[in-house]
Image (cartoon, rainbow, N blue to C red):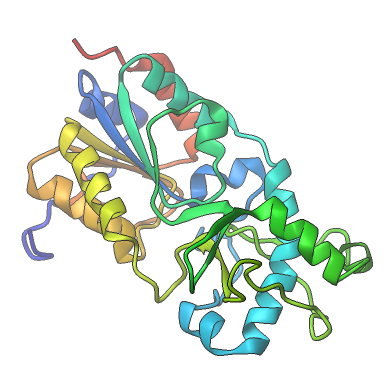
Length: 284
């Protein structure tokens, strides 16, 4: 389906959303908007400040960028670790338990779907709690790296402003990072990187294929809290529309995928998903 033959935009009500999804087993695609009520800001929400995320090329190609990233992340990841699921996460877990939702593809790295009880989750862009070596492929827990960074940078976290801004990728905005010491892989000395897909990096093929399969297994696709600005998530909306599945988009503000939707709802995800958990029947 091209942009010329995409479906006409259909802005609707909650009743329209329920009507479009009733009786279907749902694949769900979530974005940063699902986690804002847990205290994690959105990159692209209508009231979000403009951000310039670090690219994969910057991280791997510039020692200064890499040092700045790890210093910020060393503060920010602790906040995400303490963050709790909100009503929207819990509603999706309940819908999965009842057989309405059969799986979630999330563009978030915060693991809040898993924390809420969702069992079938594809973390499309990776997970904030793991670190990978780009040379030997070793994967370690982020908490293990935190202990090493604390040893290399004693008192660093205590010295920065306590209420730094937290970003969706477990990052944080702080100014003074020039003295921060970065840890290399303990096994081979290679470069460590969060197990997160950066801008300019591709999602692993195997993960993409599993996400397409999840969409194919569902009767309809529900998008919650994503502007669908990047192709990484938009491709699944296009795919669902191409195969004739109903697509419902719930988001604050317009999205790049609205033209493919059967119904769009400009609303918050926590309250809408809670309403859906109360209203959608279990498919026969």
